Image 1 (cartoon, helix red, strand yellow):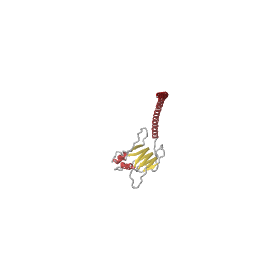
Image 2 (image 1 turned 90 degrees about the horizontal axis):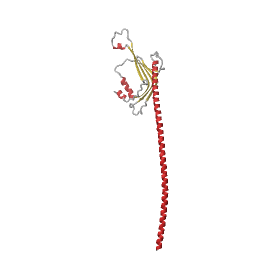
Image 3 (image 1 turned 135 degrees about the vertical axis):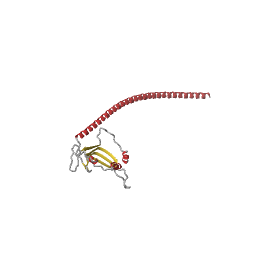
Image 4 (image 1 turned 90 degrees about the vertical axis):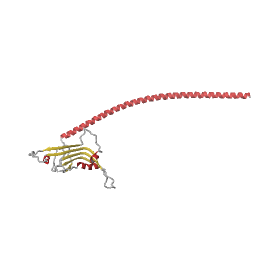
Length: 259
């Protein structure tokens, strides 16, 4: 279906079993038998014995939807039979919705539409048996049920639910603290290993520097020795050249005397 095709591109956040659910749904059903319950005539008579109420709580939810997907939700909710309205209470708290218009604009020259960002702090949606929806603010989380003249109801959260939520938060904090402790121990171990590695590297550098200094000193000594030998050789060559010059002069003098 179109809706299933669009849902394939959804990104699901990683599951955290200790975190409280973002969406909670509870269907309450109460059976009230009449005095003449043995006289069953049809299906509608049996259904009239049941009173249903739907409670929905949406909390800490961040959604990013395309307008084509939102429009497709209508196809998903469409039914061939008009059902009897079920009274419901929907509590919405800390919900952010980002609607992106991905449909082509009606006008060709339209520059396009901006995304719609919707942030809901806390609101209560109710529907009565006639199918009328009421939108009203809530007044705290520990207030008992209160019904006014128009049939509107306020938010009801028992002490048990508050305690359970608090326990979930405490467990979640414990898990976070344990993870932080493990991360801290791991960082300390890495720091110790890095210090040991750094000390070992410093010792190796010192040894290599000492070896290089020894090589440099030996090379300087060799250069000094070679320079001394060079001077000696130059002096020897000069002395030999002087001797050759003297011998040449003597030979030239003897040849001149013979003439």
